[in-house]
Amino acid sequence: MNSKNQSPVKKLLGIRGMGAALTAFVGLVVIYIAFGIINQAVFSGQNIQNLLRSMSKYLLIGIAQSYVLITGNIDLSIGTMVGMSAMISATLMTRGVHPIVAILVALVSCLVVGVVNGYLVGKFRLPPFIATLGTMFVTRGIAYMVNNNRNTDAIATGIGKEAADRFQNFFYYGKTFGVYNTFWIALVAFIIFFFILSKTRSGRHIYAIGSNIDAAKLSGVNVVLTTTKTYLVSSICSCIVGLILCAQAGMGNMEAGNMYEMYGVAAGVIGGVSPLGGTGLLLGTFAGAAVWQTLENGLNMIGAQVGIQRVVIGVIVVGAVLLDVVVRSGQFGKKKKA
Image: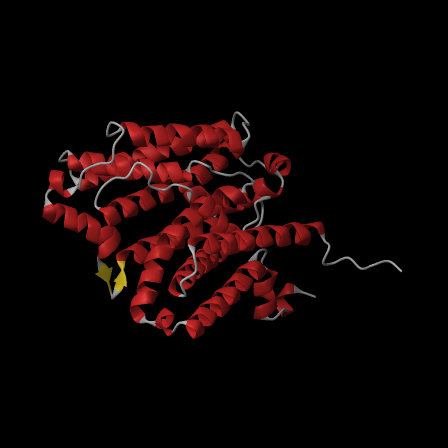
């Protein structure tokens, strides 16, 4: 059938990865309503506000990991870049450096890590697990060293209470149009990176590398540059999350961002981003981050233990990846022979 004659719904579902993204959104609604029936406080305005703010961190690291996953790679240094960003910015501010300068230094530091990751994986063909495992240790080491192996004092001790309040309100405690700024920051990042991935040539190259890197090379795709771009996106998002955690605590914590790289994987694969590369939409990552935070929030509201929360989310992540493997193998489309 000619694509021009297809209904809008069929065209929508025909987009690769859209089915998984919509499934994640449906799952989100079901989970949220189920928890709300058990505990009506889940539907409260304040809980929704807190849920959106907490979800924003998962959305940002989900975007970070999704870009890399779509190329068939992975970034294990996301969580440690979060910690490095938090510690560098907080340490500088406790020493009286203006917050904008502190933010820029943290961003540049994370971008350097992104370039290193991109070249190790794209140019020197190191396995991404090994390359980013190395930078994971390096960046966590930097997070420890910047303030002599200890957490920082409150940032207000260096830049003053007024400047500290502005920094914390911008990244975490403040609201715009009645919604926490953290969510708006994540939403702006989502819109920008969604446009790049879905509407630009760079986005098409990212999918091409993940689908078939050899074919992408033959088609003229600059694999090194494109791979580096995905790791730079990962660096930017990780840096922002580090600033959010710094603003939340009002100080730098050397262990900030611990395990966040895995949370990014979870947000992506729950939303249909394939860890095998070539498939996935940031709309799905948005849904995956929301599912993750709704599960965490809802299980907390009904008094479930942390261990149970981790088991539930772990099962969902494994199930999402297993479904992707089955779909790719064509098992759903095969008919049994007589």
